[in-house]
Length: 112
Image (tube, rainbow, N blue to C red; front, top):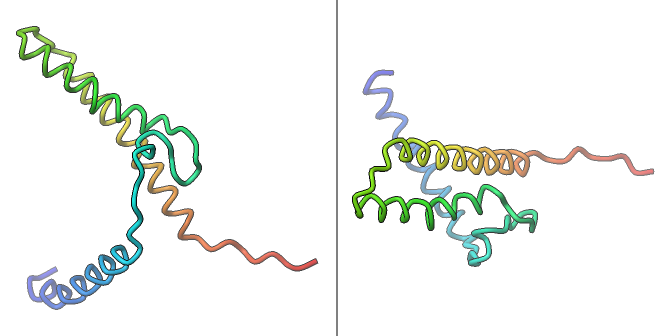
């Protein structure tokens, strides 16, 4: 695409983004602390949420403290990044699948 084509599309993209933000702000749902562990859609414990909480609140700070104390973690950082990436990927895919499913309209069932 040329620069001129992008400039023509820019106002359209800006209008779409503004409308999406306006709709999202109108819906404004307050989150509860328990949603760190419980999926609000299903009301069940979410392993990826618990895992991300543990990585962010326990494992990462503990690793920083150990490194500050002079303990060489070496390959532990590689494991940390792999674990965090895997959990974030699972959480992201689950969220995308839920958004995709909610966007589909259920088929009409015939009345009996």
